[in-house]
Amino acid sequence: MFDLSGRTALVTGAGQNVGAGIATALAARGATVAVNDIDAARALETAERITSDGGSAVALPFDVTDGPAVAAAVGSLGPVDILVNNAGNGGAQRLTVKPFRDMAAGEWDQAIAVNLYGVLHCCHAVVNGMCERSWGRIITISSGAGTGGVNIGVSHYSAGKGGGLAFTRTLALEVARHGVTANSLALGLLATPDPQVTASIARAIPVGRTGTPLDVAAACVWLASQEASWVTGQTIQLNGGSITT
Ligand SMILES: NC(=O)c1ccc[n+]([C@@H]2O[C@H](COP(=O)([O-])OP(=O)(O)OC[C@H]3O[C@@H](n4cnc5c(N)ncnc54)[C@H](O)[C@@H]3O)[C@@H](O)[C@H]2O)c1
Image (cartoon, rainbow, N blue to C red; front, top):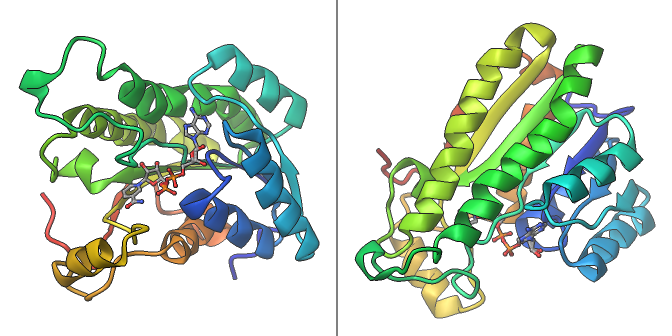
């Protein structure tokens, strides 16, 4: 089950954390993985680690917000069977966190660019080829912020993540008759670099712990597999049982 041999996967933002975990897990199941990141050194590091562990991977750095760059990179790669839209900028260090009332016009641009436009550009670059070959898997990594708007101060991130999963749901309907599935994973909070913050987040999660890249990677392996061909248009809450709307 869940054999991905012969498949080519593109994982965006795979230079570290969740994306690196997803790329590693797909490669362990036999996929050849294109490791994307805007940070070329990070992409190369993940690709080299996968290769040294016996998997098949290439680094494919580009900025998912740059449509022509996405198209050129995907064109150079050849047919993509599995796309994981993981690149995001949810980390507090990259997002302005403040109430929407205090935001100036434009302060939301980057959140929308990465979390929504990045998904559109990458899907656009691969979806016709998937439909022509009658097989494809699209997985969009979203957030509880996209389904429930759970955090005050990140309305722009919620808009981007919510847009990404709404788009993915509609795309699923459009391509369902072509052997292509499209699903989203709405993640709850994962561990942060600060153990005290992580522990306090974990206390509010029903299973008693924050998520890990492996939790996300396991769901991606399943959704990417032949066995998940009847699963499409779904947004799966991956959050340790937290209540969502
Ligand atoms: N960590 C969490 O608690 C959490 C919770 C909910 C959702 N998410 C989502 O999960 C995904 C992964 O999160 P993470 O914690 O691993 O993030 P991270 O910030 O650790 O890693 C994201 C990677 O994406 C890359 N990236 C950023 N912008 C890019 C761009 N324009 N083009 C290409 N690559 C780009 C970064 O360089 C980085 O390597 C993101 O989409 C995030 O929004 C994370």
